[in-house]
Image (cartoon, rainbow, N blue to C red; front, top):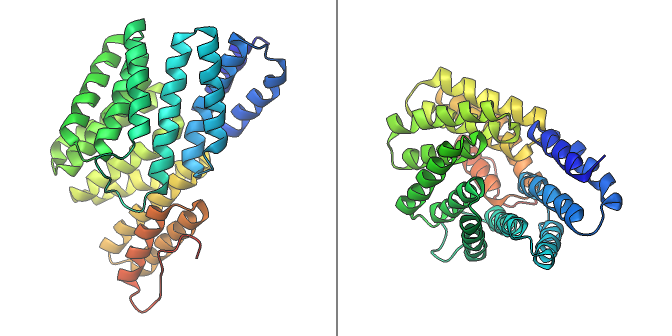
Length: 318
């Protein structure tokens, strides 16, 4: 089978949430890939899949960075500017997620994610020069996520809106979903729930239309949180439960941990203290298993409120 078909099959498997099968397919093809364009295509396909897999598992980013560094060097050697832009963008995402996963707070300094931002800006320049609309949309969105983390929300929103406009003109369904979800999040943190909800539900519909399942738990989680703040608890519960079930089926423990926190919050609000504690304890266990400081801190804080007499630490390795 040709390398381009193998890459296409692998990315189709990944979109269905069958990440391990996708990576195995690419790994088996690696010895058969000729140096040059076939190898570069294989490296980039693996990089796209491993980038999301690495953040979901909070895995050591070093192997991913080495893989993407190899892709970057090969693209430079071949003079393949489109592939170079892809490699730079993926490197930016890898650095972004590594910094995000190590964080103990959602408050970031003005100079945080600097390497990621530099890489994304370089990728954007190349993509604009090449007339790559899909890539330009992605780069605008990814630059927006850095501004979002730096609490520069208006600038982030401008990037998301531009990313959406470009994707909409090109009818790129998958590229429309992510900025839409983040626009919903922006409205949520601004307290504009009535505006946040349509964005969140639209992002969910776009994701389902795109067929990309690994992000679906996040879409349901955001919708659930907005419904919860609107006191529409039944809808909040349905989305949180769907997020958890999807995360379990897809093996995305990070999303499962977040889902359990939200389910626990909903149970606690209903006075179901024992069940809420169970959810928080499961979330804490997953957070520690993944070594995610922020996930551990969130679960521990909730447990201390419901179980003040019990010692619960924020230690990741406890």
